[in-house]
Length: 101
Image 1: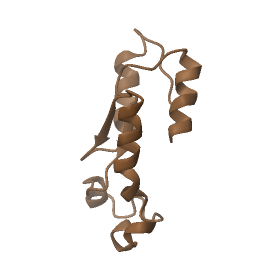
Image 2 (image 1 turned 135 degrees about the vertical axis):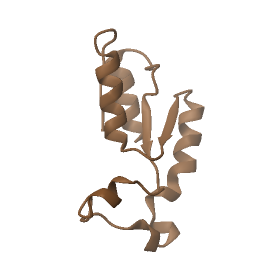
Image 3 (image 1 turned 120 degrees about the vertical axis):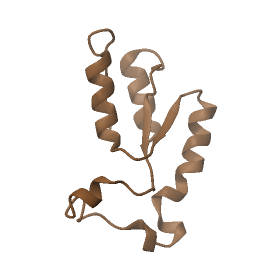
Image 4 (image 1 turned 90 degrees about the horizontal axis):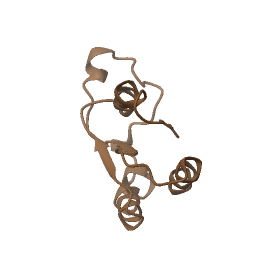
């Protein structure tokens, strides 16, 4: 993830300023209640040992982002992709948008 952020910084020629790092949350998402098959092919990390759970790395990712002075937000209750799409719809006429995933 850090390399992806640095690539985005290089592509823009600067560190982006608008919540450029949005991260999925480990918390429950209501979309699963609406559509049972939603992300049914993905691993349920609640049963995965902590050392194998990618969400256990989030504190280190946050620390690295803070060190690089890159803003970040953990998206809770919504899909991160939907939030990113909302930002692009709202700001793309005013600023150049780059999505790196």
